[in-house]
Image (cartoon, rainbow, N blue to C red; front, side):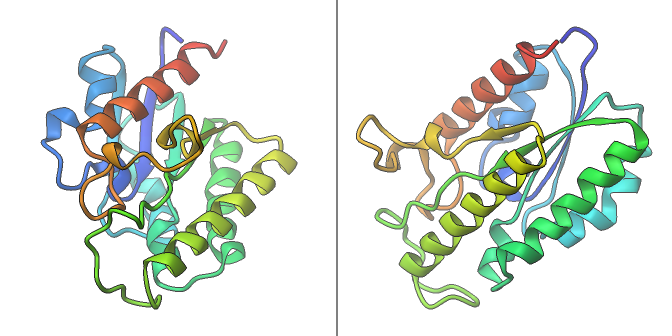
Length: 197
């Protein structure tokens, strides 16, 4: 896609939490691949926040495409998958109305085996958080397939050949990708858009 102007709307997984800015997957798309990409990720943001700031984010330039990935923080705050998906659907419908193509990112899993997190705000422990992330992502995928929406499922990228989560791709918190993980997201997103007509 030669004339791609991409806005990446999301949370810490997009902003690049605890990663040097030049190692963030969005920056890698821009600097290594030479694409016109804007990072509109905000750590800690929820899908309602992403929906609210969409008009301001779009006001900066004429984007050809928006990549949306969020929901992990919503899950931690105890919101149901239906509630989260309703926000993502509202973003999708606004973009469709404006004639802007969009792709939804299904977030990476939570690596509870290597996580150093000892407390969560609104869930009892890491196993519960992991299960709720999985449930949300499964329902999001089902919704996107039913809606015939374009999406990138990043979950399988973070698993090894046996289907286990690859801890080597995560920071110690088990939530955020490390430099290797960001490189993997960059390659996956690049390949998806590069193959679009």
